[in-house]
Structure formats: C-alpha cells, structure tokens
Image 1 (cartoon, rainbow, N blue to C red):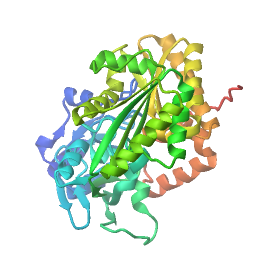
Image 2: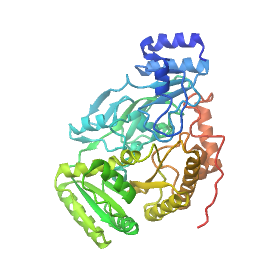
Image 3: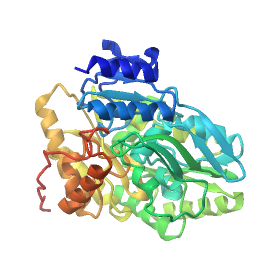
Image 4: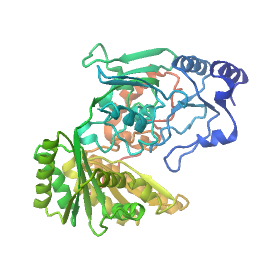
Length: 470
C-alpha cells in the first residue's frame, strides 16, 4: 500500500488526470507480451516531460517506490511486468518527433514515438531509419532502446544501438543527464549512451533520444527461394555472405512456419518445402540488380527448387508482410505462443534448426522456427496451452536445452529480445558468474536502492547448466 502523502505529492507533480489507480488500468499494465508473467502495479502514471519524471523519480526514491518504464509492452522477456508493484511509467504524452535535422542526418524524438511512425516520417524526406523490429507498427522508440531491438534489416544495417547518438535520461536519484549528441565522433569518458541502451530500464529512465538517419536506398528487390532441404538453405546463407554480398534482409522460415503464414495470409506461398529464404537487397539500381543476379545463381547452385523475384513493389511488400506476420500466424494455432530468440553463428544455423526439431520431438511439442538467418538470430516458437501444466513443464525443459545448445555452438541465449525475467535464470550461462558480478556492480552504483525496474536481469533462482551430450 502506497503512503497517501506520496500519492498526493505525485498528483501535484503529474496532474490528477494522469495518475490512475482503478482496477482496469492496473490489470491492463500488469503484463506484457510474454506468456505466464503477471504482477499488479499500484499506480499508472503518464508524465508529460523530463522535468516531471525527474521530480517523480526523486519522490519515488524518498518513499522507496519501484518504477517500471514501459513502452507498448511488446517485449517478449517479461521486461515490463511490475514484479515488485510500484509505478508503471507510460510515455503516451511524450510521443513527439521533436526535430528532423537534414544537415546532420539526425532525428530527435521522445520515447513514446511509434517506430513505424518515425520510419514513415523520415522516408517522406528521402531519409531512412533502418531498425525494424517485427512489432514496429506498435513498438516505441523508448522500448526499442531499452531492449536494443533488432529486426529484419539487422544483417546489413545493424540494430537499435547502431543508430542512437545521444540520450537524455533521468537517473535513479532524479538527476538528469545528457549523453552523446549530433556527433560522428565522441570519446569523452565512458560511453554512457551505449551503457543505457539495452539496460531494460534498470539503470535510468530514457526521456529523449538523438537517432542517426541515413539516405534512403534508391531501390530494392525482393526474392523468395524455396528448398526441399534445410542444409541446402543454410549453406546458401553462408555462400551469399562468403561471396561478399550483404543483403538488407536474409530471412529463414521452416515448413511449420510457412504453412501457418500461408494459411493466415493466402499470398500463394508453397507449403511443401522444408525451408524458405526471403531475401531483399537495396541500394543503387545497378548494384542491386547485380547482387540479386548473383544471389539467384548461388541459390541455384545449392539446389533451390524454385526462385521467385518480386516483379512489383506490391508483390515485394506482400512477401515481406507475410514474413512479419509469422508470429501472428503461429499464435492462431494454440492458446499460448512462446517465441524465443536463440542466436548462433550463421554457419551453425542448420545445426541449430535440426536440434530444435529433435528437441520438439523429444518433448512431444510443436516448435516452429523462423528468423534472421543472415545473422544467425533464430526464433524457435512453441505453440502450446498454458493451462496444460505438464506440457508447460516440457516446454521449459525444451527451451533449456535449446539455450544450452546455442551457447555450445558459440551463440547466445538472446539476440534481440533482452533478458528481463524470462532469461534471467540463464544469463550466467552466457556471461559467467564474474560477468554477473560486474553487471550487478554497475546496477548497484547507478541504482543503489534497486528502484528502477527491479526483478529484471538478475535472479536468485539461476538455472544450473546441464550439458547435453551429443
């Protein structure tokens, strides 16, 4: 129960109409897109400025009230579940594109800006913001920064951290800091910008961001290559990169995903193939033409059953939209969908997919795999029913083996979804106990009272690593 004087002073800072404690609001923000995680907050707050957030954080520090910054709640690691109660901080009133600077090729935005809104706005100026998480239609820039979101274009263009030049942030003591700026070079002290990116709201509340823009590509072409064998599809991925071609998008869908997507979108995808590669290249027209021609040759050399190059922009958009609906399509199959993002070196993609299929068979589960084959970021997705306790136990065992295998192959437990609560038990598998100690030291230094998104990243219930012998 919050101290009544705390609530009164909070209302003075934020305004009564922007502080919510009704049951519907509390329930609405008690969970995010991660299945099986839920916890009620005590208040929902919608501040309107960095200064209001600063005052609010100082007040929370005085009364030891936890704060959970939240975007659209599309994360898949339970990163915005208010596990310790307290306040859920929304950015609905801080959703403006403050500036698009054509001279410095930057955009300055507030954290509540929807990713696709920014993308469309800069493209109207013939500029380009490359990060494109699958949830970009509803995800926010602040959420993208907190999770360091990736996306379909990550292979060629990188991820969110590669486009954040500077931040305004409120620290756990309520002090406001500004990092970076509209600069191509800046090595003045520790790189606080990069430290805060991907910190999942555990180190500071991000209230403004300066983002790097690039010129919009002149043209793009999209290709669909079908394979009867996963190994050949994976070898194609390796051969494309070895040929010094870096596509804008190089996506993989297994047969289960392909069937679900076609059943949902009806765009004419063949469902009898074991694997599909969706490839897009952008850039100067002649360069794109040459790259697509060479990619087509590589696909043919690896025995692709069919190769289709989109003839029109509309056809290309249909194919890309079909890929972006993979999670939605799979979620229609059963009540609960658990999407993970084990990541391996791209040369081990086929081995990883094969292992996922073996694990699915071992535990009698339906696990489909799709993802960003070009950078090895795979999304094994289990469709299940959370009400079936025995099956959920098998799901947990299956993903433990999948995370372990990813590490054994030189990969990681998460490539773009973050740690949150979901992956916290496995973090030490990747970075070791010494790495955990370093991270905890940073957390303690910046948030000594553990009020910023507590319960995330670290856990007292770490999983003991079980080595699976081949």
